[in-house]
Image 1 (cartoon, rainbow, N blue to C red):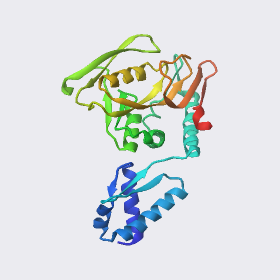
Image 2 (spheres, one colour):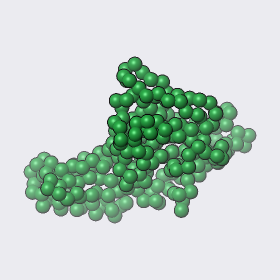
Image 3 (tube, rainbow, N blue to C red):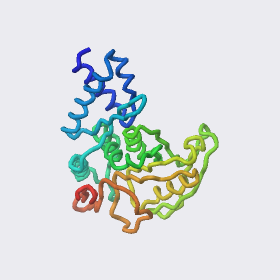
Image 4 (cartoon, rainbow, N blue to C red):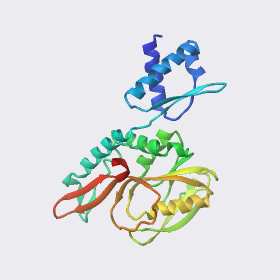
Length: 270
């Protein structure tokens, strides 16, 4: 197989499974080439990715040796992508009765979500989360892309327990926006104790859900290494959490003027 063919196959393999460490020997055996030849192929891929700001191809030293792809995005790339989402959110036809904004098509888009997953992986990858945790149902597509970008399992907390999940841990939490007591449940088999977890949600008002998730993780003796939110509203002003990372700030929905005031989070523009 020619070098160009090997490079195409290696690149596809690495990009399809970010953060996963592939043994260099696997590629050498697959293509029937020496490790030194494979190292030259990887050097070409690494240099190309760095030049085009497409992430990082990292070689891991050791007895076996390995290589992995890290979907690290530049701040400029992140800002450009979030600005594109904001422009879509500003479309007047998204405004629903009651001042709500329709976002279901955005949080289910195969065009948008992979990059959103890479953004959170860029920001939280150094924290080495072992699981991504979210609450059903709207946050699942976003959290799944984050889990894929980090190559870790996704854990979905239910609003109500299911008989097929076996023993569950159920707890009540206070919704920050409605000020009502709600319930969340997680199977005891879904998450091993003592792990590092990353919490992901699609939409946050007061932060009651993330606060409840944090408390639930404490019951599993897990360490929360980060909290990520796709869209955060400007109301209410007082949030139940403050140690989170949001990508988009929804300031206002003016039903009368048919206007959605939205912008990238401050940390992206700095």
